[in-house]
View 1 (cartoon, rainbow, N blue to C red):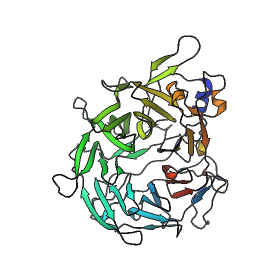
View 2: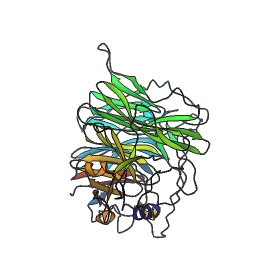
View 3: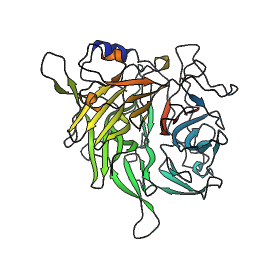
View 4: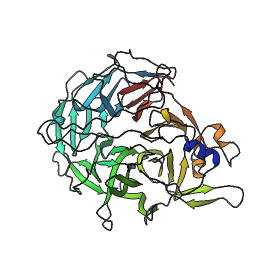
Amino acid sequence: MRRRFLVATSAATLATLVACAAADGEAVSPVPAEDGGTVIPEAAPPIEADDAEAPRRDASVSLTCNDQGWCETELPDPDLTLFDVWPFEKSAFAIAQSETLGTKLLEWTEATNKWAYVDDNSQNTYKSGHYTGKMFAPSENEVYFITAPGVVFHGTRANPQSAFTWESARLPYDGPVYPDRDPGVAWSENNPAIPRHLAYALGVFGTSKDDVYAWFGNRIFRRTSVGGASPSWVSEFVAEDPDVSADESFYIFNAAKGEGDETWFVGGRGTYRSSGYYGCPTLYRRTAAGYSAVINGSIANSECSALPGSLDPTWWIDDGWELPHGVPSSVFGWGAAVISVGSGQAVLLLDSDYYYFYYVNLAADIARVNVINSVVPPSMSPPIHHSGVRLGDRMWMTGEGTTFSSEIKKEAWEASLGIGSPADFQGGPGVGALVEMSSVAMNGRYLNEPLYQVRGPSTNNLWVVGKHYALHKKTP
């Protein structure tokens, strides 16, 4: 995907950013089979590392822990790619895909220290289950997950020793159906210098057992009971623009709970070509008053421009030559995740060429562009954001083979100082938030795989999941 950042940064920052760029492999095909059987995507070719000693998953190697406290946990099959995890104090759920098994829901318990399947496999019937997205579990005895094309599965049980009872419902999706692309999959533009990357635009999220949302493509639904009837999925919000051309696509990718009645949703809008998706970030805020578009970037003249009614992202300049001021700027790439850092305040992680994020403060009416320095993925892969979560006074984030955390320092982000090591801020106008790497290397070797989600009840009980791995950390 070709993306541009329109404001020059320091030479040190640019050197760090340039060092992160590299090529990668192809992604899986979203096109389902039509043979009447389980719909399984084609396998992606392996990521080729520059280092001949880069790790490859070896099922014969015993599970290990590293000196950062990250421990491998045992998966029931070696070819699982875990896209999301929802942990509790002594258990966790995870949603995964397999080239041979389709979509699978797993549960880990501290007593067994293993993952086991807890679904009934109904999600892999014809025309469903060929890809999955984000999941939600209100409790240890209730869980939601989703499969394409927008089928939500809801499982309940009496207690952790009981089997789940499952029900499913198709979302009433009435959005665009394209002849040349899947409305639930965004593909990055095929650029030889940047890996071809995809994101699934479907998921389930909730703030409680009575406040549950699902999305597919460009539509958000809420589980609602009308007139005392059994709950059903009701369309609440559509990300669209009637004035755009037919080649523009809109997606919802992720969600997070905010302060009070806030719920944040992130996505992207942009043009689609035969080579992929060329998009800008979007951020929507839901309150009791309804939905509002906080970030709504549209491509115009090869730039992401803020549409009326949304915030115009700016880079704060304090170079000593003139009064500090904001300069309009833009970053191509969709919104990968959102982290609430206060009432009306959020960090929007961007799926861009580098680790960019926006700090949003609605009270101040600003969206500041920031960059994360000193985070270099293994094998020099581009540092694509996959997830982020707030735990106490810190943010935890994952990307391509990386897991790291940062202090929350909003005044620094308002000044576009970003996140980095002390060395990154030497000679600058101030000190940004300090980054802390948390290596997931096992036996001294890089974990050169995408890590799609980090979550945890606390910093003493963290999970990171991704391709072929579910890592657990119970140390500070």
